[in-house]
Image (cartoon, rainbow, N blue to C red; front, side, top):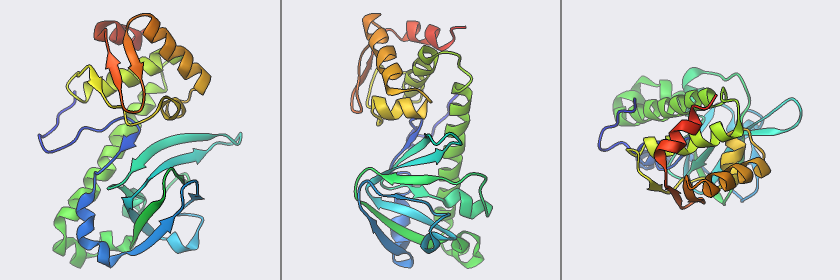
Length: 232
């Protein structure tokens, strides 16, 4: 069951945007970093980012992990107005290094992670601390949902689950904007681009969806889509 207050924007699996615009209030306390599109970086590897978290003021990036076989797995597409590494600074560590690849030119405002543990800062900016909680909780719920998706046996089940979830978190709407391209959604779900294309083609041929792009997704048969999500 998904419960939302009217002022809370429901998340799209694998994509967040404008979740933390309130951090503009303290941008003067951070250090600005400008990163060109197509660049890769890690907060754990580069010394200038050590112990910091960041607010993405402009731009968009892919957060991904490297697998033992040399391949990569997309964890999250983080668009402007959102935080990165706030969870690690709050917790004091992480289990797996995350890399970021900029999709567009990015402007970061980097903050010392100790701010989140500073009683004076907490007292002065309680709404920002609450926003960090919301940001980390949203990512937790998102990753938990994707973990459930990974238990699906077939590509069709995974894609049907993803499309169904996009619809569910918007009150079962049948027309929406996914935020992710087919290629990005494929990587998020652990599928090849060719497999994703094949499944989308099958869904269109069966009259279940009318199309799937980053900006437009139309579901024609929600009941049949739900059946495919649960197929054994």
